[in-house]
Length: 506
Image (cartoon, rainbow, N blue to C red; front, top):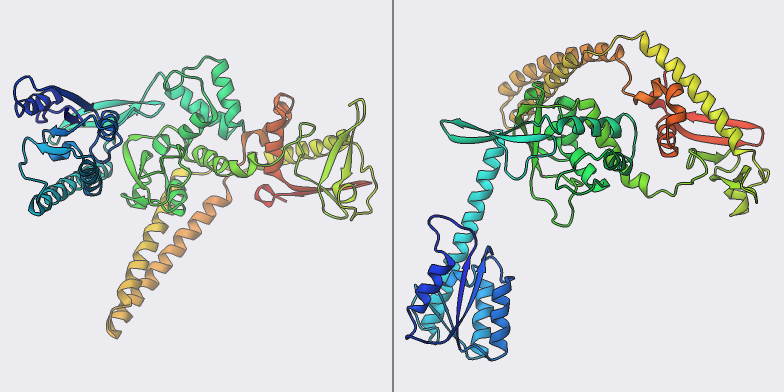
């Protein structure tokens, strides 16, 4: 039986359709010759994982095929290694192979050599096309053009005409940008978990991308995408510390634009878990999410693995913070037989027999009441402190940080030049470096003065804690306690709370 194989990856004006390939192959056969057609449409020739081609190979191994006819060799495969293995397979089962465009006898050494040469150039063509597509993709990103695919949630694509042709850009979508802003607010300011945000959106019947229910992964992907952030120096430093490459100078991060983050990612992960060696470019559209809120969400996302893997109790919002004041082991609550009373016990005594603390360290409810009261007092004093401080001039602060970064880059460049210069040139470069160092110190001094009168970037609940406390879930209270407290040392006659210095003003 004669098999005709045809493949077409994409429909293009200059490509040969599957129907045309089949017709050209049939012209090589005598009239009324029985044949079986194996068409694969929409599949690349980079590998042989194609349904019809696999069916063809199965028929070859079953002895049903004695001749294979195709329009060109690259319709079978563009990989030299795959093609060499296929030729060995065809030879093993006595199957001849012919192409309508390339004619040589594979039964002779020169024919097989010609076959390998043809396939080598076919693979070279495929790899050249891949490089050209990749380079064009990155070049579009550097120019601020949208890189393709569906528009990110909260945005829509627009098309502009210019001398270079059609340009695809992004702009906020009035129908969804409000939901995007709400998502960042809930996760960054309200300290809701990813799952809680998804549940609220599902309960409110807010449509999600793709029309399916919201879930944690979908929320996480949207929060990770910097396309909506109002980019500034803080955003630049955040991604620089993660190993991201930039197509813009740090001085450009004063314009409040969104960002495109692109690069090769692991196919098995759908999150931006590792963005090292990715590229970030500033986009033409304005950001809609403040950088402080965006970075607060990134910090929570970065710490999610550590937080989620920790065993949480359903009895208290102080889980993980309670420690024995004598031995340092964890203190855990236990309920009475009727579940009405909850008492605290040291695991160093109950599990490891290494502590002589009292068996019962007191009532959990009493400890929670003490910690809650102290948090309220702390928040009240904090609010009074913040009300007396002027709000930060974010734009001025961002310009100073960008200026310091630019000076650092100039100093580093001069140091590289000094390493390859003679003594006279080195003296001149040292003078320039000293002047730049003095300039940087002045910028740093101005930045310190500006930062001394800014409010601490603490979550909103810290200022409104008394009004919001009864509305908060156990998880939200636990998250807030983690932000404020390092540990709570429990003694039989009292507590010792160790506050986190990050928010300490005493």
